[in-house]
Image (cartoon, rainbow over all chains, first blue to last red; front, side):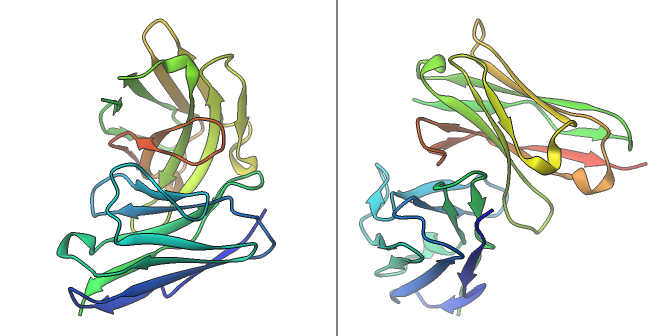
Length: 107
Length: 118
């Protein structure tokens, strides 16, 4: 299985900040990476797939980049509704695996 | 609009079985697959397996092999996940999620809490 290291695990930020979350793979996965947002008590929601393709309906302040082993999720201008936990997920090889999550909290 | 609606919370004793349902609507059920993902309290996401709604093919996470069965009923557009020989560490919220070709998930059910306790 492919191991994923997501960092930081906790990020304190203010509304309007630019934030970045990193996801590093134990081996190359081309661009087969997705990002999800999860709010407390709710199911995850798909933000980005294929490393950088924005899912329909997702605000453009979210962007993804990277390929191979290093990936980044960027929120360009943090809004109040963005305080949540974010997960990366690789789907290059079986089994699909998730990162450990990054909780974005209010500073 | 696409919806996945799951069955309600369950409380089971160790050693028992649980079967969770996931009713799909708003799309052609057999054109997509369904995966199941679980999340233990305060923990991250764990993929459990997938089932093709087209032909019923399945593939399960190695750690659950022999204890989990995923099925579909195309007449009602419903997917099912049965987990047997429940243990306390199976306590989690169980989600169904839709995938098309690659195993990333564009729509999710609301989750079903399964509590395993004596």
